[in-house]
Image (cartoon, rainbow, N blue to C red; front, side, top):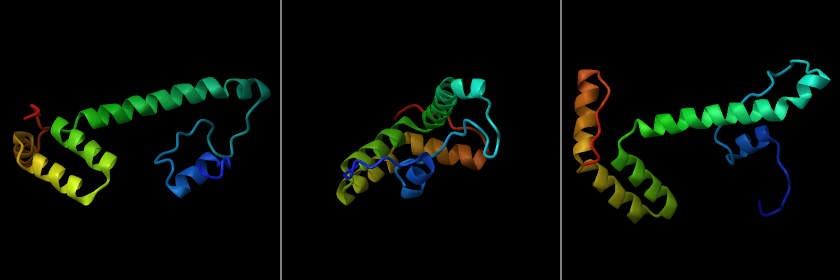
Length: 112
């Protein structure tokens, strides 16, 4: 970012700038000129599908834990992380998560 140099998707992943890659054209597959014109559309669809999948996965988590995790990352200080951890540990949702794990079922979070 500071150099303004463009990096490829694989390099961004390797550097930790991106945390996942979405395959548009399988590696080693030949692409015709007509198919090449469709790559932007395929890319948008694939990225949107992965985004929805990731959002769904996040939404399955406890809202208190998700919110606390975001706060801990946004402030990136140990004392904030500790406060957020305590907030989660004291929640009813944490207890529900532990019960659900023990009972081998999906937790039902209430945001408390």
